[in-house]
Length: 85
Ligand SMILES: [Zn+2]
Ligand SMILES: [Zn+2]
Image (cartoon, rainbow, N blue to C red; front, side):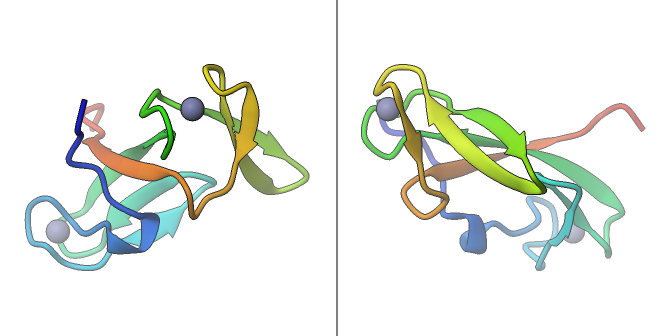
């Protein structure tokens, strides 16, 4: 299945296409629209959703299907707008 996912540095605000600020470990925010996004990451090989492993201040991505750690650069990402606010 082909997803419309992007690399981390290609992610822009879904509303204004502006640059996003990183907040927390894996969340992003648009300062112009005041919208926060959760980032979901997918394996570059099998396209399954990756687990986020937060350890020692860094985030690693684990693929349950490949059964191995994935680097940030090999994963692809999708934005999900946080609707809690
Ligand atoms: Zn925006
Ligand atoms: Zn995988």
